Structures are given as C-alpha cells and as structure tokens.
Length: 115
Length: 107
Image 1 (cartoon, chains in turn orange, red):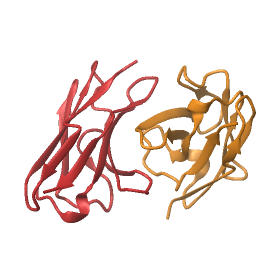
Image 2 (cartoon, one colour; image 1 turned 90 degrees about the vertical axis):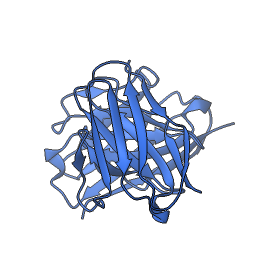
Image 3 (cartoon, one colour; image 1 turned 135 degrees about the horizontal axis):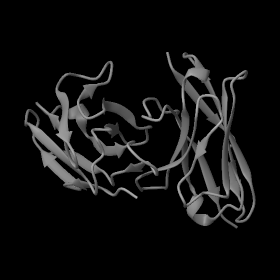
C-alpha cells in the first residue's frame, strides 16, 4: 500500500523559514518523480514543486520560485520542501504527492504564516 | 500558463442521475488530464488519469472523455457517497495547473 506521511508543519512568522518532510513507503521511491501541492483554507489546489526521480531536476511555479526548494533523499525514501521568506499567502495544507501525474496523496500538513 | 476552467461550479442532482462535469483548458493539453475527488476534510483522491483511464479501485460508474481543450467527467448513476468537490488537473506543461473545482451536491 502506498503511504505518504508529511511532517513539519506549524505556525511561523512572515519572513521566516520552515522545512516539510514526507516519508514514502509501499513503492520503489527512486522510480518516481515526486511533487508538493497545497490548498489554502477553503480554496482550490495549487501545484507547488516537482522533482525528478534522481533529484537532478526541479520545477516550480512563479509564486514560489526562488523561495521554495524541493529535494529528496532516495536512501531514506524521503521528500523535502524547504520554504523560505514565507508570506501570509503561503498559508495552506501542503500535500506530498507521487508522480508528475499526481496519483497518490499524503494526508497533508498545515502551514500557517502569521505574526 | 494554461488556465483550467471547470463548470458548473456547483451541481445539484438526484441519486441515480447521470451527471456530467466539464473542464476546459486554455490550450491543447494532449489528454494529460486527471480528475480528483475531494471529500470534506480529506485529501484528494485520483479517479481518472490521462482523460479516460480509471484508477484502480474506483467504481466503474466514473468515466472520463475528451481531447484537445475540452474534457468531461461522467458519473453514470449518482450515489450519496459521491458528494464531494471534483477537480481537474493538467500535467501536459509547466506550470501544472488545477481547475477551481465543481462542488457536487445531492438534491
């Protein structure tokens, strides 16, 4: 069974940093691209970042480019999202998702950016 | 960026009805279109991938079709447990984008 378990969320002040982690199990992690997707409270879904299976290439929308960094440790079956210079508009539930086609989702972790 | 427009934003139908949800892309997405179901308080779940492929474990009353810029999700016989918000998603080109969702209710 595919499982994606996110940790690291919480309350953070604007301008500060936070790092999310996602531990994957139930599939061969290094065979898959991985992504992060977020959902602001009561809002729709927004793709945040993707990384190739080797970690050699990463992709971001303009809304987070230069502030967020996706990375992975294939030996530990773990995906990361380093979020810097956080803004109030980054407040959302962040989901770890498998593949470019986003077939499996974690349960999500809440990030609140507020003073 | 490719804009994904879903219609209607809210749909109310009766149990047993055939229901059609629409998703229109601002440019050709070559059938790289997925549909997700999100129930209240839960993570989204993949229903259909690449326009018309049913994800494992999803009931056969769900089906997808389309090409180019226009895509549809059909529920052949609406069930009470289908109450949810449905999102479309294109993974043809960067940045990847979602539709704003259709909220499906039971009359």
